[in-house]
Image (cartoon, rainbow, N blue to C red; front, side, top):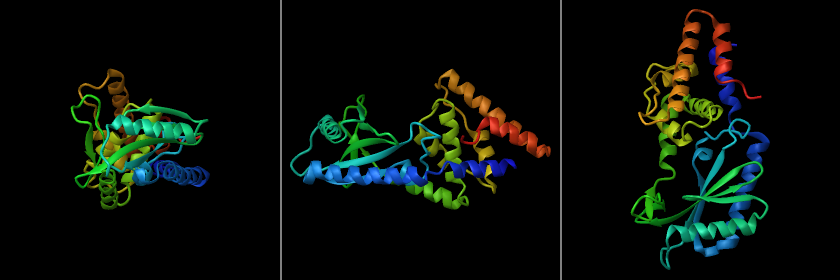
Amino acid sequence: MSVNSHLINLSSALVLRGTEKDSINTSISTLSSRLTGHFGANISQQFRFGSSVRETILPRKADENSDIDYMIVFNTSSGTYKPQTYLDQLRRFAERNYSSSEIHQSHPTVTLELNHIQFDLVPAIYNYSQYQIPSPASTWSDWMPTDPNGFSQRLTTANTNYNSQVKPLVRLVKYWNALNGYCFASFDLENYIVGVSFWGCNYLRDFFYTFWNGFSCSYDSPQYVKDKVQRAKERALLIRQYEQQGNEGVAENELQRFIPAIS
């Protein structure tokens, strides 16, 4: 098997599908029905967003932190409350409807941990023609604007422009991140990749090499993260050199150690 074949097969194995996908869809349908039954007209919209919509979410066997971002837009026709009020309402909803599940608040979400997937329930309001979610605690304002679907369009455009190779690359890099203790937030990696110029890249291996050649940490990243990234960059370069020298078997073995197949 070549380097490119290994990357293609692995990126395909990292697609959420089958029973796991069906179970998540069933859970989303159940969540939607329970939210409607619990809140009624007090919520105006509810929908999932994030990596599950972008098709860059990883199966749990590859990423134990895989989650579904789910936005609940509260009706503010009778007034707008502080974010904590809505967070408390979501927590009480979760406790009433999912009593056997692990539930906790992690600003700005309420996390609902099911057996097969985690939901991050995000309270929101819709004001001035934009969605708003709770601001970080360190800021002066209660709410901040967000575009839950804007990045999805950017990723789709980049994927289309680069011959449908960007989403597979995103899954590969997120898998490396999971294998290495989550050095980076998943969204930050996706956002970085969308901004990379992959001019001249034809095969998935080219995208993979180009990513690692240009990727770097910020100056204030922890030293252990810098070390892991540097080792990754060096290993990717070594694999590329072996491949250029015609040592496909050695390159493949190195790649297997770098990002192994899912067991």
